[in-house]
Image (tube, rainbow, N blue to C red; front, side, top):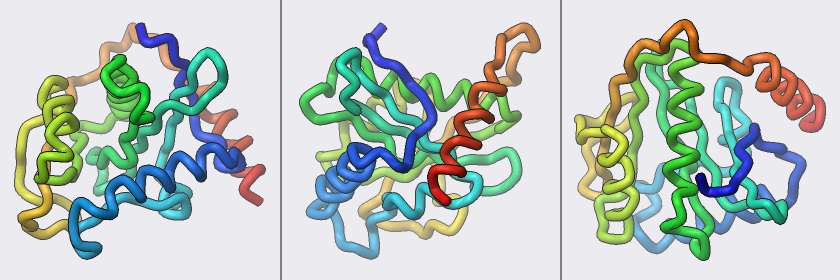
Length: 181
């Protein structure tokens, strides 16, 4: 275990805004603007998008991951980022397992993603492949782009005996929505 706590994002947290801006800043030099598909803070607030954060024992934000709807039973992995100083410690795998479990819990049958095709993104592509993602054609509104790699994962049906904590997630959603008002 990585020693992180994963919970739904608090959009009122200034550390979240800074963390997500650093993500966009990291990606900016990797491809032309027309080939960059990362969501900014407002994009992550869209209805249906679920964003999680990973925090270390000291309370510092060390990772994010989101799921966004593509079509019924198909979601896209977005904003997957680990603090550069903490990469290689299992945080990304822990976050990825968490969001895939959430997708299964909500009867999502497929999770897809778009990531860069450049060497900068090789560790991300390896992580996704390790977790069962395979390359695929563009999905949703994407078009074939030499700067992008598209990957997808078909999810197995969730066993009925797996405990769900939907009440906690719903309470966190309500609190986030109230804070955003």
